[in-house]
Structures are given as C-alpha cells and as structure tokens.
Image (cartoon, rainbow, N blue to C red; front, side, top):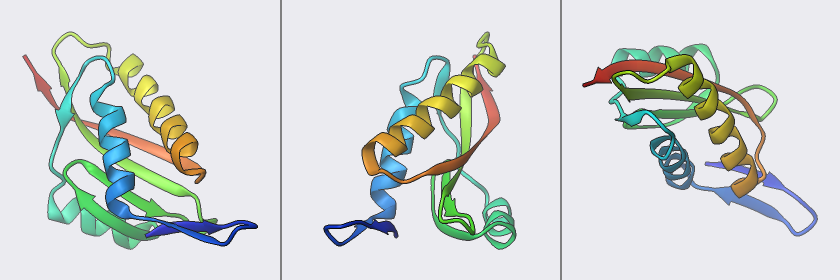
Length: 119
C-alpha cells in the first residue's frame, strides 16, 4: 500500500488501484498490444535490489524507493511496425502523468521492457 499524509490526515492508496491505473494508461498508448507476465525470477530480483515491491500484476511491478517515490516496471507487447523508441517515450510520460494526476504520488522512474512483438 502506498500513501501520504496531508493537512486532512493520512491517505492510503491500494496496490490494485495503482496497477489498474498503470495498466489502463499503458494499454491506451499507440502501438501497445498489451502487457506481458513477469516471470518469478525477474520480480524477485527487482524486489530485492531496489526497494519494497508492491505487487506483481501481469506486466506491472510497482515499488517505492528510499525517498518514497514510485518506481514502475512495465513489461509490454508492441505491434509490429511500431516505432519502439517513440512508444516507450510516450508510455513513460503518460504513466508518470496519470499516476501523479490521479494520486498525487511522485513517480521517480518508469522502466519499460518490450518483451514481445505481435504481428
């Protein structure tokens, strides 16, 4: 669970909500065919090396860094012929903006891994 405190009190945001927002933002980007499953080894290494892992939900792994900001790992499928660099840049900006706009949490980093290409 992620959260922050303001003048009203403490606000907790569920992991399911965060992953659903990210999944929705990613799948609505041009050229993205979907998200891929994260294998167990990758998610374990990611959780051990860089902060607390929230949840493995399909191709989305959200964790916090030492400053309390979010680090989001995405594993996606793209359609054949998509300019991957442009798609990744678009996804990075859209996911960061969407999370910050919807929750008020800071997104420090979005890592996009293109695992598959669909014809």
